[in-house]
Length: 126
Image 1 (spheres, rainbow, N blue to C red):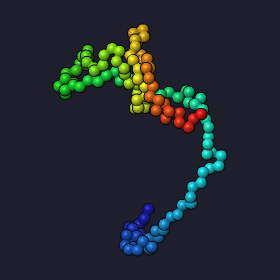
Image 2: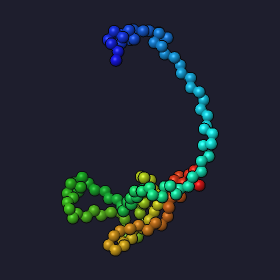
Image 3: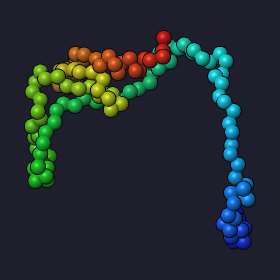
Image 4: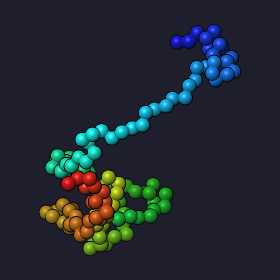
């Protein structure tokens, strides 16, 4: 920790040369030999869990309507049975699907996959 006298001395210097400031030159970076083309598979990622979400629909409500919501209230969405829904992975649209019912549970049947996002996931992996 600097003393008050050292701080005053430092602040009173007018020339940057007196302050001991020097230009730093860094050596140029060179690629590490043997690591320029690492090939790996996706098998080491098979156990990684990813959270997916599905947006079933949207609704616009006035503040008065939101304040009036209570347990048992029903919000009408802009989707109907058979409409496609978005499958979201890491806040990105990953696929489209359709809602199905399996033993009283909802599920989603994948209809199409966003191939550009799929390509981003596997980019550089062989």
